[in-house]
Image (cartoon, rainbow, N blue to C red; front, side):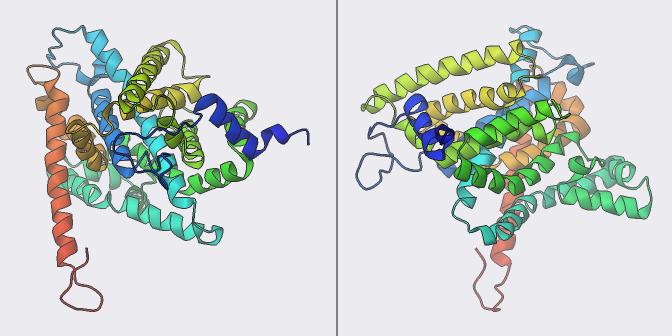
Length: 400
């Protein structure tokens, strides 16, 4: 009785009243549910891809110029911008990890929501297999390059005993190197382990939010690390990014994107303009806070709320904007391959030519172009293999 304020229904009412109270406002190009004017699925897979496209650009900038040590010894021309300003903006690109974690939480929560409890383990394994197999061709190509070009593969995976080497290779293929602290071909592949953990922990978060509401899981996520001897784990540790993951689950559970788009004036142009102003201010304040607040002890803000502020602004800016949205959706479709490939080029095999460009802006552009070419070729080969693969029945049809 005394805790009725914490009931899931009360918590949903709180979100509806204080954060994103819904107003029926027919928008531009959205599907409506039952002709009521209430939009549904307003953060679709296409929207997710567009945000991923922006996040992967932030990641490229982050890994190119966040600190001078990355390009030490190379004559990088930053004109007409001060070098420290470029470093600062690129450092802000770290929000890309929180964005990817949020999208994972949102998408996985949507996918698991209607799965019966008895089928959850199978759904998680299926999702894991589907995600990790996209990494295998690139993993094998990198290992081959490390044998042929510079012996990197031999140094990393053939310096111990046979059993240990085989285990390291297996863990790498399963995306578990970072989790078990074994060598990685490039250190930036640590997020693969985060992806694996997210796949298996999201249904637990989704069930917890569904049963107890959002307040209790959020409270525990904030309180337990500060009560137990856990604390801030660092910017490349999986636990650090559970806060944006939980935010994604909460947005999916309560339909907050749907409520967000129904908030405000009924006129589409006025609605978008007001949201752009509000989210733009929030993103700007988030950018400022990113450099004012220390990650410890404010990592939920640093890696959760600040990335969310950028995500909302960008999503509002590009949604249903011709050409611009299509461009970011295209980048989003290739964001996984770009993530896997870009640091192999930037830090291992093409560091000198990439950092020797006549202007600093050409470095991430050239890196993006290289990664896109590789990704398009790789996806083209995958498509050919799928169409050539016969069905189990042995007929003339091909698997799509």
